[in-house]
Length: 467
Image 1 (cartoon, rainbow, N blue to C red):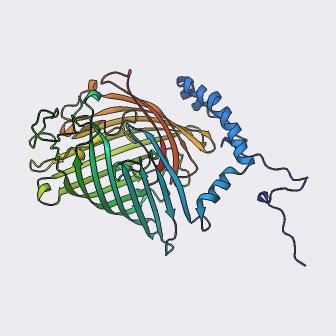
Image 2 (image 1 turned 135 degrees about the horizontal axis):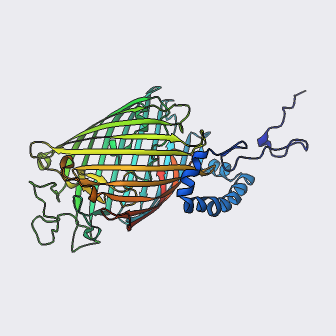
Image 3 (image 1 turned 90 degrees about the horizontal axis):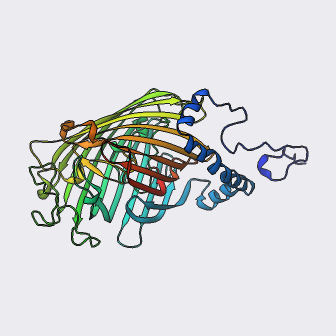
């Protein structure tokens, strides 16, 4: 006779005497007791705390109970993944950021042909002229060494340019069209996999970066080395025919930004081709087994760019910088972390060469000065100080409260003045179920120089793709 196995929790109906364990809906645990240190930010930020406590949690509790009761996440995952979870497909959506809404799909596949090969691909469109697509093949060479091969293509006619320097105004906004194919090869060692995207300059397809508040799953030391080749073609956008983006025709009356070859940036309205050599080194003191623990992280990065072909032969520059981050666990591994960062980056032209405006250091968007739109500020140097507090709203949802202070300046921060620093603050909500595919909602505010009063707003809802 066949012996019957004991019932399991996922079998459905259990014995009458079996008491089902109450799910940990809010991720706190039965024995959770907040640290006294938690009350300091709660008092200062009481309005947001009240929003989190009484406005967000009540409907989420009902939603979480319904999801758990009807096994909604399990069913959704079974519909979107195949081959025992090795292959999956997920929808992508992005609304906001000063661009047209984008919709698309993301696909991942693990153990492609061989156990050490994974693939991720994504594509979005606004069903008109805008297309963004990319594919990353990752080959695991060793436990702490990966080789990434990236192919991407971007075609957009709603990109925004505000001019250069610390005095750029939102009223100077113009739009331009860009076609950009890109190929990159990158070696990732150790905790370099958790480094900031600022050092990689990959084409973003989804929404937010992860913010890098968690330590890498590898070890305390890491590095990234890569080579990247891209071609940039610019065209006058049909959406703004009277302005035509940055320097559609040099020296014509429509050119409000009169920088030339000898100035800070040349606009290369005909396009250019570029090769970049990139390197990043990182040190992280946090424990690998406790990603929410207190600690310090240092990233140092550099990038050398050189033009390819006759039309781009005058382009040569070097970008370099670093980011120092400190993390404080406020609740004893209960996912409440306070982070402070200082980011500095410089750009040098080599021997008086030309510098395309697209290669300038940019602030605004997903990682720096998050209350402003993407590429709101462009210059030859930048400094940003950030303070961020992350806490779990629910078991599958995290919230980030951030404050950024910074701006772009001339080379080597030559014209730096404290009165020209701009404030950026807001809140980000993101799902925490997956690092590869996550939905995010961001509301940010940007200020004028020397003031914290709201002057610009940024609203973005979208899907983050983990590459």
